Image (cartoon, rainbow, N blue to C red; front, side):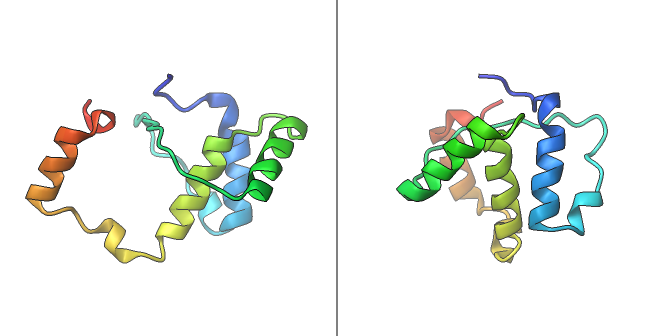
Length: 103
């Protein structure tokens, strides 16, 4: 699995971000920082899954992971606790149990 953000997806991500939050779409991506993608499992309704597959088929350059990223980032703004670091013991346990976070 690639850890870098595909360059061909930046236009799609910008368009999605602008639809979700027009004010944040103008913020440039930090220079020199490489985005690291981590896969995880979740579930959506059957109807949402079909819409995702239809968009994948019909929209050139549509990337589900970038849509997911933009939507989650926007929604997490409603949870200030998401910015609060984990307690040391919880962070240590997570780092030991998650291969995805070891780098």
